[in-house]
Structure formats: structure tokens, C-alpha cells
Length: 529
Figure 1: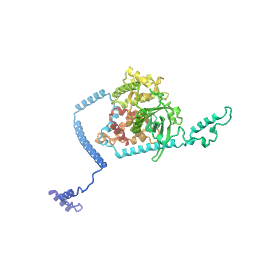
Figure 2: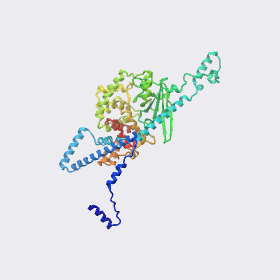
Figure 3: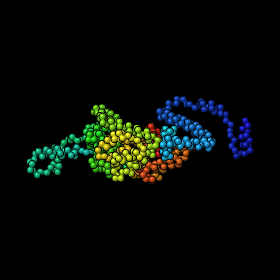
Figure 4: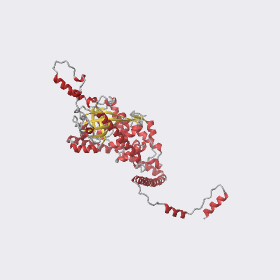
């Protein structure tokens, strides 16, 4: 009551102050309760139920984080009140832990990136954005499939080279050996000499029995590694073709053949010389081609004798239906199974050693192997690899290394590509994770040069959503500088990051992250993809 009187008296003393009207709140509440829920209200749709659930999850996460932040502030206030003696003891304990964990300052700064995985605000990514990505990907695949059909159905039967071959054989059988009559390909072919259909004539029905797959080039060259490739395997003749999808700006696109339609064989591994079949199409499989057989390939790709493509996605529905029809199954030989078992055992052993210090060791190993490659062809000797493992304290027994070398050096020339060496002995992240690494680099490399300047990376990196920034323990600049310091250490040039170095950095972070979605959060949050 006194508060009301004070307000009235203040208003009378100072006429500039507004007088607050007294309202009957009880009557308002009653009227609101009567009109709050209208009659015949339709049930909420699934879309609004999903939005409500996302909002509820975000609010719950926010409240949890608020309570955690208050608890951490209370802890920090207690810590600040410690005596100098206690602070000295804490430093000693921290030093002992650092020696035990074998972690350097650089390792700890690299591990800060893992904080994005535990942030509750990042768990729910933009549904609208992901839906748009799916629609764009489907549109791209449809565009490539239509172009393949156009390319293989546009050639008329009358212009098929087989017409000339058949007619020429018939003409030769009717003429004398010493006749100087010109071959029929240099003369006009009459209508009655033309077939209605040739053996190589393709129809839409024949070409519809195909399996579509996505692929990427295994290369440390950023321009080649980020090429968007879409392949097709045709069951009518066991042939395949690969097309490249190019986008120029926002609206202009182009689809061009990258590997011409033909029947191809494996060029490496235990299946070298065997023809490609449906069983060879699965996510993570490698398709190898001789660069000399494809003169239209880019010059950077033709630098390597063998072109290696990795399958990143497969149309499983088409694959399963065609497998059922042809009754074709994966025939993994005992040698291949044994090779996989040996590699898996070595990879598990090394990943355990690299769990916390992976960024420093793996990126350092990549730089060291690159320096050993004096010829620039990517090939190193067996002694170089053994010395590199010893230098970086990656312990592999002599027997395991010899078994590993027999698998890697299948050609028997005593040399191997150091990129293949790293992928085989340490392993790789799966293709789902790799797709986000490529997407992040493609966003940074908007000029498609294959490398990005540190200045551009610094401009694009955003640490707003890092848990330590949200809690107030660190600033955005501190998190960004920690990231840039660890990334620069992984690069051969101080002012530039290549695709291979960018990939190695996140490859090493991936070792310490079990869940795929946690890794996606670590990658997508700072880059905004």
C-alpha cells in the first residue's frame, strides 16, 4: 500500500512522470482463461511438433548450461581463494599429469577443437539447411543422369560405325583380291545396305539397368580431390562411365564425361586384371584406371600412372535389385580377408597411441614424408617409412611391419606412395566424415586453386559457439589463435594451407572422436556449413 502511495506522490510532485493505472488482474486472468483455447482447434501437424520438440530441447540444454556455468563460477571463486602453497601443489600435480599423458602445449590447444562436440546448442543443426542440401544433391544427380542418357542415346543407328564394318565385309566377299575398288567407308552407303539395329545400339530400357554412385579422386591436390564425380555401372555389358559435375557461380552448371563408357579392370591390389563387377561397388571401394587410357584427363591427374577413385555413396536400392536379378555376391578371397585383418590390427594399435597427440604426430609425419620425397612423385623406400615411424615413436613390431609391407608393395618394385602408406597403416575417417571435410575446404577455397591463405581461414573461422567462449572462460580470439597455431604447425608454408594439410589436420582430430555426429559438429560449427 505504501508503494502505491509513493508512486502517486511522486507523480503529483513531478508531472512528467506517467501515472501507472491500477488494473484488476483477477478479472483479466479469468477472461484470458475463458478465451485462451478456441473451440474446434485443429491438431498440430508433424512439422510443428518437430519444431516444438527442438525448441524444448534447446531450452532444456540452455537451462542445464546456465546451472553448469554457475557451478563453475562458484568453483573458480573458491580456487582463487587458495593459498600460494596450494597453488604451487596444483602446478606440481598438473606438471606430473602432463608428463604422464605425454601431451605438449600444442596437443592441448588442438584438443580444444573437441569442445564443439559437447555443446548442447549445436546438437540440433538447422533442419531447413540440411533439407536444402538433400534437394540440391538430388537435383545434381538427376541432371547428371539425364546428361548420360542424352549422350548415349543421341547417336543415331544410321551413323553407328558398325554399319560400315558389316557392309565392308559383305563388299570384300564379292570383289576380287586384285581389285582396286575403294572400301565402302569412302563411298556412299545405300539404304538397303543399312541395318535397322546394330549390336551396339542402346535403348533407354537397356541403360535403365544401372547403378549410380558418387566418387572422389584420392589426391593431395585440392583441385582434383574436390572434383564432384558421379559414376554409372551398366549391367547389360558390365561397363561403367564417370561424369564430372561442375558449378560456376550460383546458376551456371556443366556436366562432362570424365571416364568414357567402357569395360574396365582393376589396376592394383589382389584383383589386378579382373573386370569390374557389381560386387566391387560399395562405399569405401577404390576404382583404379590407367591414366594413359584417358588422354582427356586433366594434366594434374595424368601426372600419376594410375588414377584412383574412391566410392563415397551408392544407390543401394538399384544395387540390391540388380544383385538379386544377377545373383552376384561379394567373393572376398582368403588373401584379401587376411590382408584386411593385418591392417585392422596395426591400425587399432596405432590409433590407441595417437588418441590424444594425433594432431601433432600425424601432421608432423605427413610433413616429414613430404620432405623425404625429393623427386616429387610421392614414392619412398621401405627404409624411409621405417625411419619415419621410429622418429615419431609409432611402435610397430618387425613382423607386423614386414606383413604390412608385403600388402602395400604388391607390385614388388620396393617403393610405395607415402599417401597410401599413411592411409593403410593408420587408417582413414569414413566417407561420411570426409564429405564434410571436403565441403568445408570447398567453402574456403572459393577460387578453386587447391590451397587457402591463413588470412582467409582466419576470416572464416568463428568461435562464437565454443563452450569456453559461451561460459566466459575464453574469448573468441583465444580459441581462434589456438586453432591457427596448431594448423600452421601442420603446414609446410606459414601463410598457406593445402587441401592435403587441411585433411590431415581433421584426420588426426577424427581419431579421438567416436561418434560421427560429434565430428560433424566439430567441423561444421566453426565453419558454418
